[in-house]
Each structure stands twice: as structure tokens, then as C-alpha cells.
Length: 102
Image 1 (cartoon, rainbow, N blue to C red):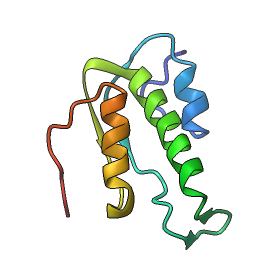
Image 2 (image 1 turned 120 degrees about the horizontal axis):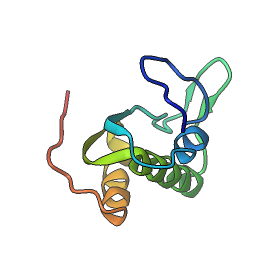
Image 3 (image 1 turned 90 degrees about the horizontal axis):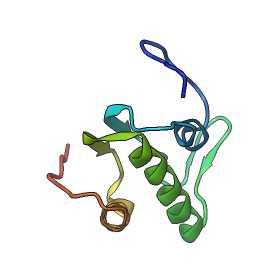
């Protein structure tokens, strides 16, 4: 992956992060759609649960691929899917350190 230092890159995170040849991120902060039915201008945030969870696994895997071994991964997610995200994280080798609730 070419150097994107000090740049904002737009695109599909799965596609972009999977192009990385080696881990480069010290911190990944993900704020995915919560799948709660909110209607955005061009996106309706309600897909079938199994599709949502499969997509969640895909973007989490891409984020982990980009994350350096000493890095941190923060995920903002609503209560409806927080437990699923935790389980997916465990299956992908992540260790939960803390819940941050606000």
C-alpha cells in the first residue's frame, strides 16, 4: 500500500485496507452503520441480520489486517449488535480490554 500519510482517503474500507501488504495502523476507530433502520440520503441502514454480521466480520478482518500488533481497535456500535461484534472480535483473535459507554 502506498503511503497515505497525512491524507484523508475515501472509499470502501474493506477494499482499501485489504490492499495493505503489511500492518501499518497504530489505531483503528470504526463507526459502522448500526443496522437499526435509519434512513440516510442514499443508504437504508437495515439489512438482514446474517448479511449484516457477515459484512461486519469482513470489515473487522480488514481492520485487523491493517492493525500493528501493538495497536488498538475501537468500535462504536449500538447495543443491538454489541455482543455480536464482541464475539466476532474474539473469533478473530482480539482481546476486549474495556467497554466505553456514553
